[in-house]
Length: 330
Image (tube, rainbow, N blue to C red):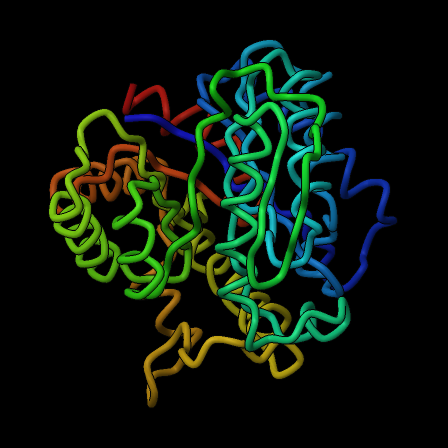
């Protein structure tokens, strides 16, 4: 099993200065480089203190400079919010500067405030996402780019630099809804699976993806399919539950609140279900190091988990994950 960290840059209640948020995250990334992790995956968000990282590519450059072997993932580059040629240039430059260590994850996004503030019509988010991904891949692999689509048109453009990894960095598309999973599978893309689904939902989506991938004539073997899980770990189960509850409240209040009403007509929580209780009971892995390790092993058996993308909800959770859980599962 591979392990990565989904790195948020949360600023809860703005209790510390913002420079401390970035310094702590970069210190963690240095520990990951020595601690057996496959990759750090940097989360892009805008206009929310849930995660104050509007440029995963800029932070990725810092992460690459502080590490030797750790892969640098984007989880995700919010593709519809970028000009596609600028996005192709930035990710390719990061791949060059990191020595070919980029994992490119691209996503559509869901927070309406981001689309409205950047002047991107929410109803165009899906088509812009798909067109942007196509342009980026072609910009990386074609000597000169000609493109005519719904949103963008280019003629005879040489996009530089090209990525160091050839033909391009490995690519994942964030896919939570069934429609997104089916679209990605039909085109042979690997997917990133979200931290807000229950384990049962992740298993069902993983099976759907495998079936649609096979139907389109693509092989599932050899692919890394990261499944993101929020993690709260402490020496005492009660303390871990308290960390999990605090994290669930923070997510519900600042990330899934009214100001971030989704552009997609769906919800992270079924109607009539208390969202905090759902995170505690079905989504967040929480408990002692031994209990969390056992839970991960169950997910490996029950839903085919082979790449765990951890989102620790506290620094203590991260350190116990690194020092006590990963060695047990290695």
